[in-house]
Image (cartoon, rainbow, N blue to C red; front, side):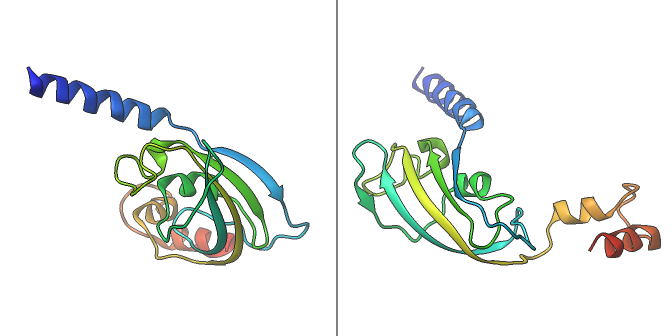
Length: 144
């Protein structure tokens, strides 16, 4: 029976993680933007992190999965406040901040293109044949 309970709890945890939502407030949006952040980019950021429960500032060098959701389509110089639930933050693993909702004030200083990923290949492969044909590559070059 303990193993059934354990499996049930893992199932519930997975459901909660899927439904976890990052709340985003735009604090500053640059007037001119030549490059928006996308999944896989390398972002140089300045941030401060706080516990939602009491406003205590904490220090961390780790990024949370919630950042991937909250920092999409930002420009250099843009600033957002992210409220990240525990399922998308440190979960059970965070030293001193496990199971806590976190608030981040994040400013993007620079965006660097990250390595190409499987998703990037799928975007380029227009006819889904797992090959990059001349039309596929031509379309990519025109889009750039």
